[in-house]
Length: 110
Length: 112
Image (cartoon, rainbow over all chains, first blue to last red; front, side, top):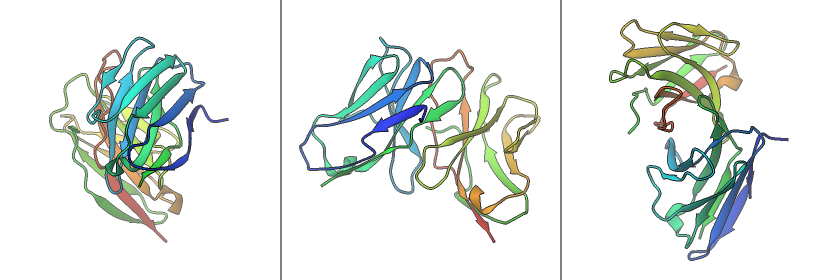
């Protein structure tokens, strides 16, 4: 089993719908992150959390919210999805150094 | 903003060494240089990191200049499976609370 698991792996939805992407990890790490990747671009940080009671905005947090339900779980929500949120989303975890990434969630908003 | 500059793309012949440069002229004395790669649309994979000294592991070597303003990732014998986007990242000390910021990386194409 993967150390960092993202669900769903693929999702197609319509404009205005609420979407939740879930991430769970078995690494025992305190730090978790959500990144977004658009074609031809690098990864951009959406939100991050350094422990269960800590939530921080990244570069592009507008239109997104997160919930750190437990040390092992970090969810990303799009309250009202719009087409320009179509992207590949990655969850990652770390202790202090190396990041471990999930396999990504591909979201398409029509 | 990413604190590094990398060429957008590079080619390398299979079996030859791939040398990927990275400029980080504003790096602070206690910041590390990390390298990751992303194969197709998979999650990025850690390769190597260093502070001042050159580093080597089973995947690659990292050469950091004495002034620490640039570095080079070396894949000694590139294979087709090394075709990927390579990201050079500067990060604060391990005790810091600033997350990694990725730039656009270098797209390495290994050619048969």
